Each structure stands twice: as C-alpha cells, then as structure tokens.
Length: 412
Image (cartoon, rainbow, N blue to C red; front, side, top):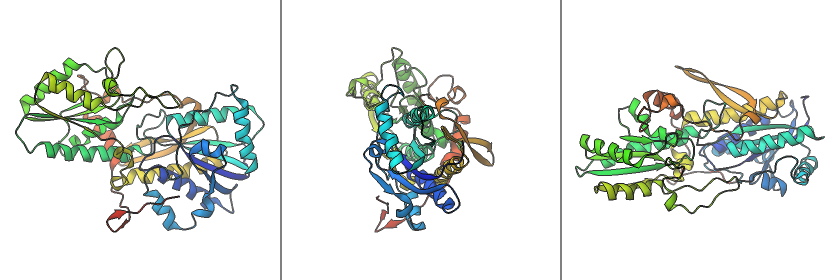
C-alpha cells in the first residue's frame, strides 16, 4: 500500500488491563516521534471504542499529551483511559449502511490510519473493517494492537497485559499459600482465576515452583475436561501430605457434557459476542468439597484485581506494551495494513522478542490454548516448562507515582 497522508485514530476495546494504557502511550509516542516528517498529522482517540467513533466522541491526543509527565502517568494507569466497548460489527455485506456511516466519520476527520487495541473480539472488528474497506473505495491503514490478560490470541508468543495479570496472580497465590499454612487444621482453599477457554492465567499461579518451590497443590485448566470424582481423589491425596491444600482453578472449567462447573451459580447472561459471563466455579467447588470431604473449605475469587492491579504490574509487560504500540505506528507508516502486531520470542536466555505484523484474518476468532506440553499427564497441574515460559513475562517491578499513600492515575 502507498503511504497515506492524513490523521489517525486509536481506540481501546474489550476488557481492560493494567497495561492497555501503556500500549496507548506507545501509539501516542510513535505518532509524536514522526510528526513533521511522517504521514500522520494528528492522532485522535475514540472514546468507548467504535461506539464512540460512530458518535464522533473523539479527543485530540496529539494536543492533550504535550508533556512526558502525562505519558509516563498514562503508562502506569490501569483500565482503559479512553473507555471501552463490546460492539460486534456486522459482517461485511450484511449492513453496508453501518460501514458507510463509519467511513463518513473517517472522511470528515480525514482519518487514514486506524489503530484498535484489544483482544480476540477486537481483532474481529479489525478484520471486518479491513475486509470492508479493501472492497470499497476508501484507502486506509488498519492495524490491530493486541491486548488481553487471557493470552489467548494465536500467532503471538504472548499478549500485552498478560504479564501483569500473571504477576498479580503469582504473587497473590504465594501470599494465600503462606496464609493458609499457619494452621494444622485440615482445610482446602480454592482460588478461582479468570479464563473462559484458555488457562494461561491459572497456569501463572504455579510460577513460584521454579522460583522458590512453592505452588498450589493442584491446578485445573479449561483445556482438560473436569472430573469431580478425580478432583476429590486428588484432594484426599494432597491432604495426606499436609493439612492445608490450596487449589487454583480456571473459571471456565467444564464437565464432560460441556456444562460449566459453576453453571448453577451463574446468571446465563452473555455479552455482544455471545460469551457467557462466568463466575462461581470456586464457590461451586467449595460446596462440593464440603459435602464430600467435610473439612474446612473456602473459595477465593480473584475477580477484577487480576486485570487492574497496576501497583503490581510487570515492568517487562509495561515496556513491551509501549513497544507494541510504537511498533504498530512504525508498521503503519511502512504501509502495513490489515494486520496485528505480534511478539515473537527470539530467545529465552537472555529473554528477547521481536515485533512482527501478521494477517489479522488468520488471528481473529481463534483461540490459543495452553500447550499440551505445559500440562501434566494427570491434568491437575502444569509443568516446570510452563513455569519457565511464563517467568520472564512477570519480570521486573513497575514503580508508579504515589500521592498521599495512593497511586496517581491519569483520567482523560
């Protein structure tokens, strides 16, 4: 594609993370560094993703971020500073009026570069918009910029946002294990961790095993069918070893018949993409263990802090998130379009990655599951190889600024 001259727009979509604003900062930095020499004149931010774009709720980010202090603060601010949405675009050909209305906004603001920061559903948006604009008369560079704590995007070694969530889970699990170890009364603690289809986050609970030898007794991922009787056997075996058993489970665990383990405690509500709102797996297993084994049992749902605990962010994750945003701008200026920026691991020791654009149509609506080699034969834990893969992603402490004892955040 020839190099286009015009303005750019960036948006954030889907569930927020502790690093999604660092990626936004990377896009802003990339555009700022080329001003006067490149092809992007102004960078706009769309509030609440494509929904805000259609309503022309735009903010001039080139104008707003006029100091390094603002950008640095943005990098350490959790959640999506521009706001988010879960808007599912129609398939090209089903509702041309929708796309023509979107292109009318692009024309009005002379937008020739579109950056969308998000996960799997956001890449669906990028793929559909790419398909429509490629078949119609509007030249535009469209790039997906990855973000998801679930780490379930295919074609990339890992996703920005995952490392910080994994660090929070690994640290919190270590603290829970120590808390549970103070008593000699037989007890089971079930930690419920996010992950509908892929168990990467739950796998992170075990990272301590290759650091200090401390990890949950059992780890269950949605990549394996959950068997309640095998679960009870595993617990009884663990209780014979020591009285305080800690178990990490993914919220998306399913029985052999396809039903979610926590289905009885869920509302049945779904989002715009048809995904069920999951919660209650830990509580369901708490009740089941209490009824079957009769020992003291508690469940802990880590919930939203997994994705918004910026005070415990991974320095590596934030640095890579900024670099991903900058790489997207560089790729766009080089004429790359209809792609997602991926991270390719070049080496483990020393840990190093490279950024490579890949066709977004080969990424959207696909799921990257935890590798078989990362799950033990019994399906009740992860391997050391898995922990070693995860370890570099949580490396380093990202120290944020504090004011009167509380972290400082930037509010757009």
